[in-house]
Image (tube, rainbow, N blue to C red; front, side, top):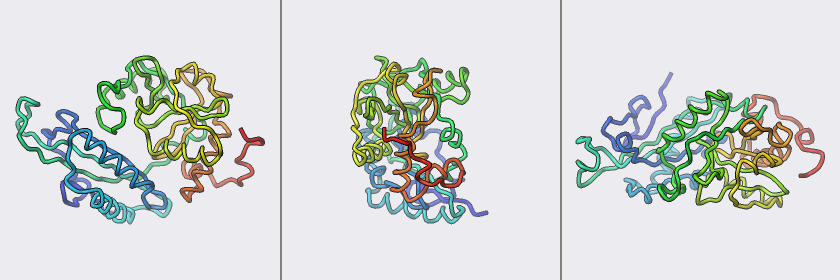
Length: 318
């Protein structure tokens, strides 16, 4: 079987050769930024949004990309076209952008930094494994708030997508001792809900969708799509500080994320949200998202055949 290709420092290489030396600053200092998109029908979805966010992250991190945005998009299109040849007709790809500050063979941190650095630029793809999220769609997620708090934006801007996630690793290990299937949902230092390690988090209550304030979270591309769909459906979308109290008392809660678009959350810290099952408005929004993407996302994730639309809608609009 052929091997997928990746992009590493100006060259297309077999994916197995897309590696970094141990003295790369992405490893030594976590001096790196990233982004991630998925395909629908093996075509990139919202690629320009992801790429522009990636370049804004690079600018904030003082890492100068070696190629411009147009070249980045061209590289992505080539990778997707080549690696999609290894997929089945209904399979999809995830594409990762990753850029580090470059290599420092002295390995002495700030004490031995060279005068000039050449950033390390990587793009690579992988097949999306939809069975990973089947249970999420059928039963909903259980979110637990671990002890480690989210990075305060006063220390590191929440607006960039980065790999400084040791606090999230520790938080995930902590909650797995409580519930192996749970998802960590991080609070800020004031006890406000922020986000999970791989998604945004919103609630639906009193007829409106409520997101944590954007200065405290990475504003996801999927969160933007949710906001657009809400506007189209006439549902107010607001930003507020929310706490676990608000989540427990919400009608529904959701996790927008690139791989699965929008997942339902049915419990937080053991307490049910709504009736403790995936809610009707979540499904309505997901159906609309499927129309936009041109693919039934629920069927894609659950491996269940598409259902007639009338069976997928609640009796009354929320």
